[in-house]
Image 1: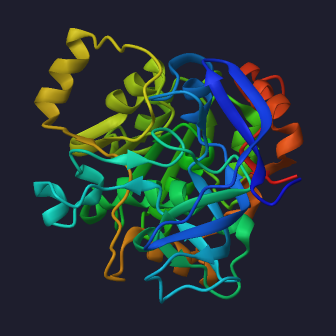
Image 2: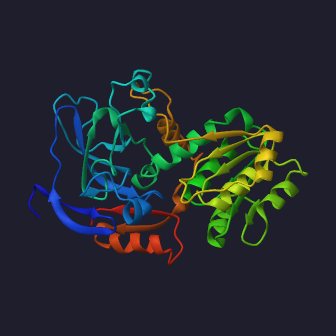
Image 3: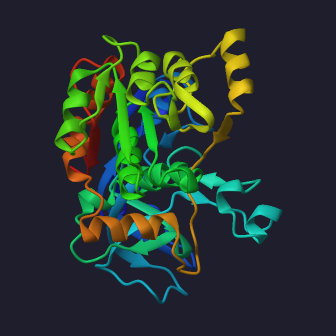
Length: 354
């Protein structure tokens, strides 16, 4: 393959994925080119590829990734070829009111690697130097590639951090991000973590991660179970992490008086709330909290990305058991179709250059 070409999985239109050679992205001043080690497939990637599309075509998707610095543009001093790094995929404008307060995830005019510009289902990605964090010693590139979803899960739990210590946290949806949220709840001092899903393999994975209170909500009514586990009081915190109508209803129906419900999963359909449920939420004075993305610091402060990497390095956060598939780009189209069709069990899928 010529030096100026690379292998990439390119989305030309909704559902039209092509493995092809495209130009290696050029470096500008202040940018770093990263050779991809691994890129995770986010739950949002599947509808983005097969139903909703990206903001323009063609696009290389993939925003959960880690790799090795390949080259640095002028003005880059803190990184050098050979460094292992993770990349914060949101490209903030630096000019709006949110950016002035370093609230980059609230930027009014942001770009995004993997949806608004080319991402990491490829051999190389270029990103601003400000978006890179070194991978600590002892953290593999596979683990580092899961920093983004683990930071998103941490951000959701930090929305209710003061309500977690010694309390019951119920999580509805035991996919990768739900299991990451469950681990953060345990790390933050939850007395009990209840996990609900309808896929037996996900619940078995939760048990392997040390969670005992796992329930199949296709077999048992989730609200009934949550009440039974809390002496009829309901959970202090409910995390909706699947994005399907029934898990919204289960999370809202399982929260106790003065409790909080955090909306973490990407919604896949409209949700209709019964009037009786709304009345219960009002009488219980429930807090309903949204969450999106994760906090990131360009000053090197203790943001959610650095917290994740430190937790992996120390063994506090366990991510490797979540990986069920590692596939090269040459097999990635088939893998993504399998995920869309749910023709076999998967948790976290990592794609790597062929």
